[in-house]
Length: 566
Image (cartoon, rainbow, N blue to C red; front, side, top):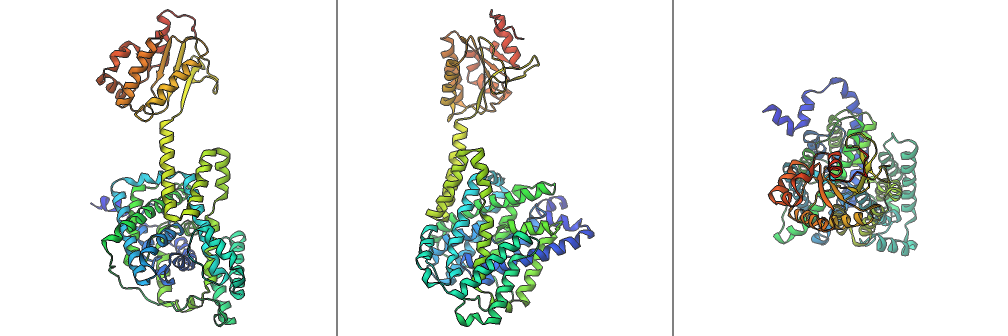
């Protein structure tokens, strides 16, 4: 019973076996994480359309929940830029400017997202972490980054912009430059420079906290609030009471759509971060457990009047670089955030909105991944184009359509790869048993009269015609008249009804050309299916071989001695 409990609450197992010498490192790391998480949480609350204190609420219970239920020792669960953008796109149209409804609907959205993740984790759907390819996810996040930068031009320049896509928002900001509030712009751009320089040259320092402290001091001492510089204003101290939200059934479908997008994108992004730090620290991640843990974290955030969360790469990096050893880092950070909520909210009233805009812009610049784009361009032009299309989709159509575009591109890529799998014509390289490779690309010598063909996929309904076309092409391009066609089935894990028909038709077609079809290295599963479909009788049981060498010997025994290579 204890083993089962610790399987689903691994953080408890960590606490029970916690090594005392780790606490100093975890405590320092927790303080470092909190110093970064506090200003970023406030900034992300502004991005998501909430009052600043909601960002603090979202940084307390979620990391505690993940620390108990998650499998990563370093991952910090906090508000995330991509999730915040989807919250605005989902809840904004439904709330229609009513802040009370906005909060209620965001809580419903968090609950739906949490339930989807919990059900997914229990159902073994953590594999969706592999669903969005890295280039498509990069493109989506790049689009989010550019959209965030555009959305913060208004607070940075001192006027309010109409929420819209990247291009319309950027155009409006440029067209209204003459309305710029100079004091606000000077504060914002100065703090943005401070953030970028601190991250570049002093990466161990909590740059967001420094920016917020400088902004507060500037507003307080120069009385900029009276000069038109927008500030956060009073932040209520203390924990909120749980809120039971009101909603109508007609609001559920759009909220469920948004929750599905958040669950997919947040989890995939979170797993990228978690796996990276797990590899660095030599341990493995349980994706299903982490999907379950993310769901619990979202429910915990909703309980505390917060909004959806995800794995926060910047705060996780802080935890790791500060020497965090275990999930206790997140517990310390949450405790510090709770302390700040109870006793340190008064100074937050002087935080200039331009400082939050600078923090969001700095975070967005860190989110934008130009290096990976260069790598994709050099490695795979099609995947580079998919990444760019995902970026443009988010920038032009919006965040939620951008999710659908990213998912659609992933599905199209999977279908294309599955329907046009790799194949190879093999040739002998040495006398070693089964030592065959691609004839030209890898130096294999083709055998006169024999074509050895490998199809690197299951043979099923959506690629059966492609398989048949490829076989005809290979035979047409053979360097000598073909007498034996050997299908290497070692890379063929499965065959369905359409595949059996394709093989049966191929056998008949080859027989009309006096070419013998042989099946080499079929799995027992493939052999059973072919037996049941009676395709074995058509091909001939004597033409099934356990090795490529045996297939060639059979060809030689049938009278062709030109291939005396074995």
